[in-house]
Length: 332
Image (cartoon, rainbow, N blue to C red; front, side, top):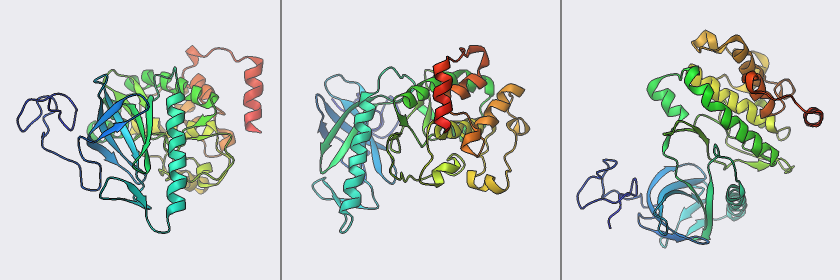
């Protein structure tokens, strides 16, 4: 059976896939794993197809889980700044970069284990498996058949509030569950929120996620306009960090405008009200969004639950005394 390398669906002999219309003869660049490579996980085998994208820290391939026939996405730890691909497919650290490479691989494996342990969060990408081979590591995730918010905005323009906001609440609730489990994402942006074909929103790419118990300095590649001011420092991050990033993502989706960088806003806050940019929000909705976009962390919602309750007051349940005490201590 021949598989299309782009969609991993069965295809008859020919030049173009009848499902996605792409070439059946396409392969991956030489520095990536070849189409057809098989990786053996803890229980299943995964046949790799074409690469879906590559960033500074890794590359993601579409894959087929051979035992079940379901598609998956396989993310390979392959930081191009400190490693290279050997002829046998192994990933090896560049001379003098061994410590950097091994440290990054450790955090990548921790990400894989964390995602594989998450349950009951349909708005968060599901981790299926993780593999350690080729002197590197692989995270197997559910394949997401959707479109990132940034692409929708780029191709169609701003998203009407009436379409986006009803889909937002389940995402906010699941991010709140992540926070309750002690995990902050730290990289929410229009790149990492996908509009699925089913209509729901899904959060992906946990490469920057860290435990809130981790007291170490956490360096990430910040996305200006979506990263709150505390991420330009070495401490002070928490659920309110994801609150700002999600609010900035919503702001961009509703207006088509990237918010000014949070550090620039410290001296001269040029953030425009979303309604001035065409977003059709009620006064209460707009104030909730602007509250979540406050630059000083202590002036923002302390957690995603507080933001959600202000944005959707009709569904907010009264806070218990214990919940009020917990929110108070998070601020201290």
